[in-house]
Amino acid sequence: MPYKLTFKQYAENSILIEWPTFIKEEILYDLLLFKKKIEINKVESIVEVVNGYCSLLVVYVCDIDNLYNEFLALDILYKTTEIEIDRNNILWEIPVSYTINKVPDLERYSKKKKLNIEEIITLHTKPIYTVYFMGFLPGFIYMGGLNSDLQINRKKTPDLKIAPGTVAIGGEQTGIYPIESPGGWYGIGKTPLRFFDLENSEVTFVKSGDKIKFKAISEEEYDDISSLVKNNNYTPKQIKYVR
Image (tube, rainbow, N blue to C red):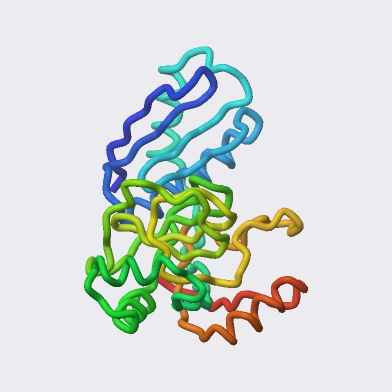
């Protein structure tokens, strides 16, 4: 059954489409399906379609002449056009070193949550996470599925420099910093993989709808994989994931 969508003008040349404000896989796949419909049917009139947890931003080539006509056209497209979308997404295994040497923030997080590091590792590596969208930074992936015992409020004062590859937690979410950046999330691990690489044809190998499974590795394994990544000799492990 279609959701009741809200259409809003976002700028002179863009429209924001909103679903009910819940972080749910059913909403994610519904909006990804609609995103594909828009991209197929309005290929000459749009620049891009960007998805969030429960919204799509449609950016047009030119300013929108008749906003309400476009709202109606999008609503009809959503409700009537039938296409298929591949829901057998990729499950990526992401190696992570959960050590204070790699992520000094881990000790502070451990004390705040009253969890030892082994408990943090167990709780963080157990789920299969869903990738909802990219944002904040190019290649920064927002995931759903974080265990409630790991959730923590963001820092009141953000850090000025968080290292690339830092696996972090903020609020109800976990994510990975793709480049060095300020940030208010707590770093709990570090991956040697690159999540933003301008030298590759696809600057990030993960897409919305994919799945993530974190795998704990030693510092030595981290260093070994890091060397392979730097020499472009490492391919992230992927498994076909059937919903």
